[in-house]
Length: 230
Image (cartoon, rainbow, N blue to C red; front, side):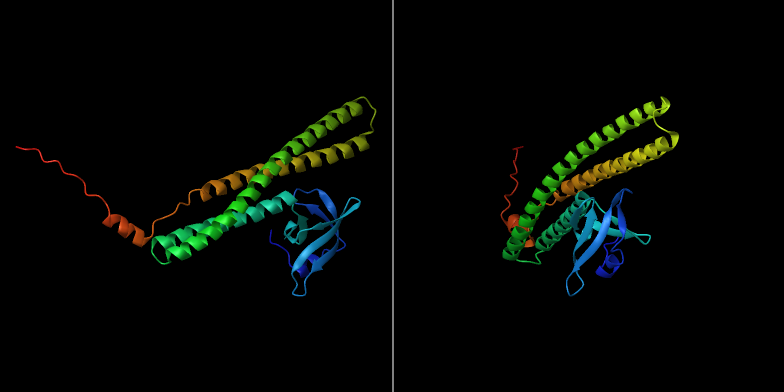
């Protein structure tokens, strides 16, 4: 799902939108843009509240617009930056290893990358804990839905709820359960991917430069040879 431009988002002002799991989200009422067309925020009515969404939370597919949960938009941003930082770290080590950059330039660039990686690591840990808490919240909701379904079925069997009302309620509860299940599965997959990227980034280790390798070879101690008298 590509990120939408200001012209694309504007087409959906005044329309109701769903989240990526099929749940009703709210009504888009306004789009904030800069003179150059950069989208800075989207206003939506969610329930009784007016909330501002980040542009990265709206995606389009098949002529429809969908809202990403905040946690997913954050995860995409953090994973993208982690992968970018990892690629730059490897490129830097490769350049230094070949002797294409000086030690001073290497140290300066490495300090900057290390600072960025440290901040990303902090964001990663916070989001990881947030996602684990979100899974617990979803489990509570799923349990609540199962209890509601069980009670509804009992009331229907005992002729306390009309068939039409029963079918409508069952469909609504099942749709809610399926949506929560999809989100839970998505969170788990996201956590796995985040952990994979994090582990991969730890594999980047400093490589000695070409000059350092040469100096090391020059000062390498000779292997002692023991001569046994015949």
